[in-house]
Image (cartoon, rainbow, N blue to C red):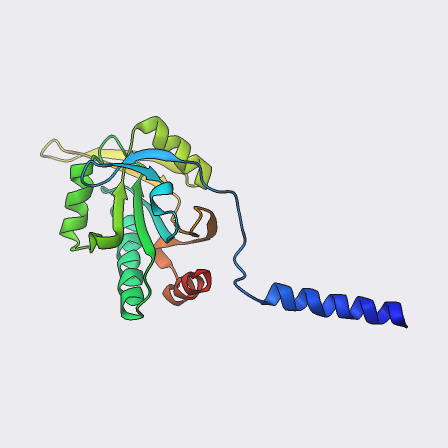
Length: 195
């Protein structure tokens, strides 16, 4: 009888421990990558955001559908966190098209969308660095069909992962969401659970 009580007590303690705090899984810390922000300043990702929760989206500026939706959703999340007086959150958009998405292109992309860059960085880098980074975080971006418009401009696309990642204060990805159709309330709750 005593051993059954001990087992029951241990079971109750385990349930209590796992129910407390957040329930977001832990993974490995993302490696450090030297990138450039929209102002051409060197940034070490994710180290520059150490001590902050990060909301990270993966985009390319020529994207006609998923990336603008992902960017808009990140803007909504940013605004809702401000309204809830939640600080200590860094927003990051990483381009997986560094050949086109130079810092000036990223800056224009943010400006056209009237984004608040007070806690949002748009990052790019050399092709090999970006390739390693997106592979590490599980984002796939494959060049797709291209078209030449009548004016001679080449229109190109990527088939790519639809992703927003939530990173904790130590650069560890805690959860991934579909960027273009994210449940805003879910990520807001998850962010607040990491505070």
